[in-house]
Length: 167
Image 1 (spheres, helix red, strand yellow):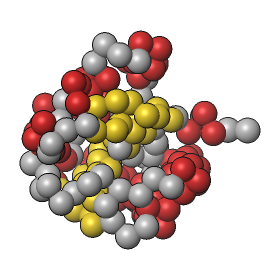
Image 2: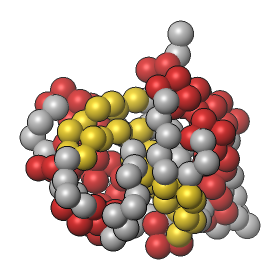
Image 3: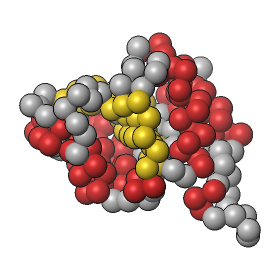
C-alpha cells in the first residue's frame, strides 16, 4: 500500500518542511481514509513511514484501523525518489507479508505509476494527473519475495482518494 501523507499546514518562516504538522483538512482526510482501511480490512503487518511530522501524524490517524503492525520510522524515506522507495521495498525481509509505505510526492506518485506499468489505463491517467494528499494505491504482489517487486509482479487492487469517500 502506497499512502501519501495527509495535507500539511504551510511552512512558516521559522518552521522547516520536515516539521510541518497536518492541517485541519489533512486530519479530516486521514480520518476518512482510516475509516476506509478499517471497512476493507486492510491490515499490513509492516508500516514504513517517513520521519516528517506530517507522515507520523498521518500514521497516528491510521494506527487503530491497521491493527498492530510493526512500524519503522525512517529518515531515508523523506522526499526520496521512486527508485529509492522501490529499492527500500525490495530490501524487506521475507517475513513481511504486507506493507504500507507512508511518504511523499513526487516519489510516491512516480512509484505508483511505475508499479502500474501500462495496465490500468484509466487509473494510470488519474494518478499521472494527480496523486493528492491522503491518497493510496493498493497492490497485490505475486512474487517469490520482495526483491522481485516490480510492474510485472503486481496487480493494482485500489486507488482511493479522500474525495472518493465524500458523500
